[in-house]
Length: 202
Image (cartoon, rainbow, N blue to C red; front, side, top):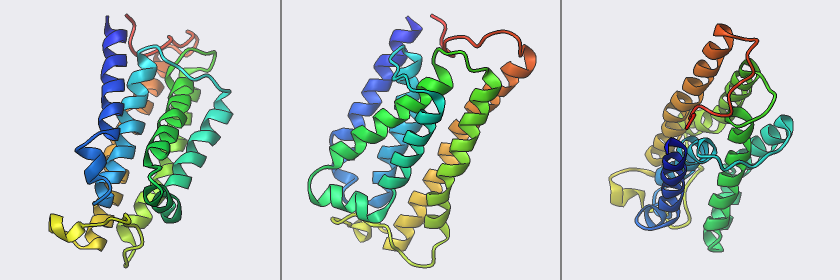
């Protein structure tokens, strides 16, 4: 029952990122576009994996895929191109699938120890922090949506970018490091016991 609930909630969150009002607002405010990414990466994808829907790759390939897709879609030219050509759904879908592949290795079934899983999650967290840190501390705005309407939300373009950077840095890290801490603590407690298939057991 818990697995089914996790799957339903995860897929519902994923759908919400691609539908109005968030999909519409995400075209007008960069911070909300990054919120779409965060919802997929830090909530929807892990819940879907805990719900039993996995995308199995070797852990190193899953790590490379997720980091590569993440960094690509945080390159201004890439996300602006997707928005201009009405391909934002493709952008979100690729982020979602890459995140599922990553979380399938970190949380799903497999021989990897909880210690290795925790390390995998922490290294991804540190690597994916980079765009958020750059956005937060950059002196000028370089990330904005083609249909940017930051002033309509009471923000300058730079404040919009800084808000996006803060969202990418703090809430995402709470999820990543929270899960990594749980996995590491479980590994320390009983390192010889094979990891369970997921955090959700029924």
